[in-house]
Length: 142
Image 1 (cartoon, rainbow, N blue to C red):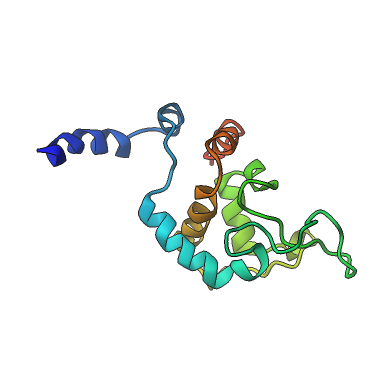
Image 2 (cartoon, rainbow, N blue to C red):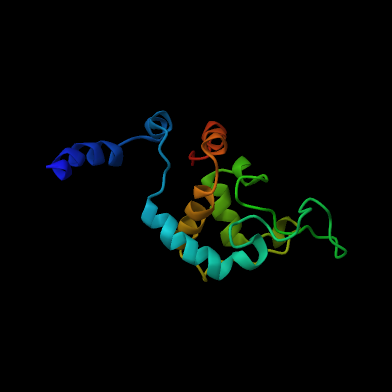
């Protein structure tokens, strides 16, 4: 019986616009995305960004001896929340080298779906306050 009551709610959520999702305080990804994204993140991102996206170098803002900057935390404590979903996906796809970083490009290594799952994982670590600030900055806008 409970399952029958959930069907209209799921249909409503699946047809919701980005603005409606913002109003419902829901996140764009599913628990399954987070679970699969954690695996993608651990295999491809954790060595530089930390296993909980916390970063691996305490002062990620300080320039390294090679003139580059270390990988920032992605757990909501750095600037990742300033960037839209499209921009985050693009950075993963193209890597950080074009903008002066050292992050390799994952185009051809990760599918778009896998990249979005990795983003879902680290965004799941963001507080509701950070996630809402990201939405207000236009995080879901194309």
